[in-house]
Structure formats: C-alpha cells, structure tokens
Image (cartoon, rainbow, N blue to C red; front, side, top):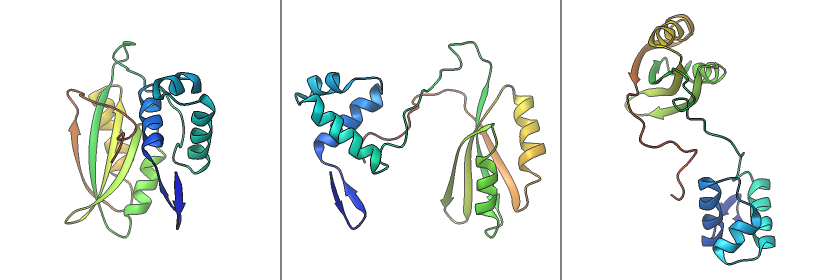
Length: 159
C-alpha cells in the first residue's frame, strides 16, 4: 500500500487480503496468511494499515431475514428533489431506521436513491407517505419493490 497526495494505492496482496476478508471477515490472520502463503504478521500489518487509513471502515454481519422467518419487503426509492434541498433530504433519509442505504446520482437531474426495508407493503406505503413525502424539497418518488435478490455485499472486491 502506497500513499501519494492523499490517494492510497493498494497492491495485489492488499487486494487479496481484502477479498478474503469480504468472503469471511472472521478469518484469522493465520488463516489468511496460510491461504496467501505469507506470514500472519504481514497480514496483521496490512489489515491494521488499511483500518487506520479508513480503507476498511468496519466489520459487519449481513442477516438473511428470510432464513430467520422475518417477513419483509425490500424496495428501492428514487427520490426526485429540488436541487437546493437534495443534500438535506438525503441526510434526513439516512437517519431513518427503515432506510438501509442512501446515495445520490447525477443524471439529467439530481436523484436520491434509497434502499428501504419494511415489514409489509402497507408499512412501506405508510413510511413513504408519512415520512418521505412530507420532507421539504421532495418533488416525487418512484418506488421499485425487489422481488428476488441475486447478490448482496458491502462493496465490489476490486474496481
């Protein structure tokens, strides 16, 4: 890993370590070292450096709600806003418990895209009608309900 003008460059070994952590963040330094044929101390050093630089933000658990019998609906909302209000709308959405992810996108207009999880379609409707629509700057909302999931991860393994 090299730092140049506040840009961090990862080498192949850093990427290999990240890929293994993304597959299973519970892997020990020794297990990763054995897999990559390097010393566990090297793995430790690399991971600590990536944590300290903010490349590795956190370790988390992705829960499969279906496997624990938790009824839910996942939807993706595209929120069209007044450009002057979009950042504030995005921040407010990010604070809501139903919203699990928020991003902005510049296409022909500024959009906010939010991933939302609700217990039922009725709860989803109530959330949008009572919490999102009233936000200052919201012009319109397009909602797509996810019917099948093919992949879920925190990030791409290498770009």
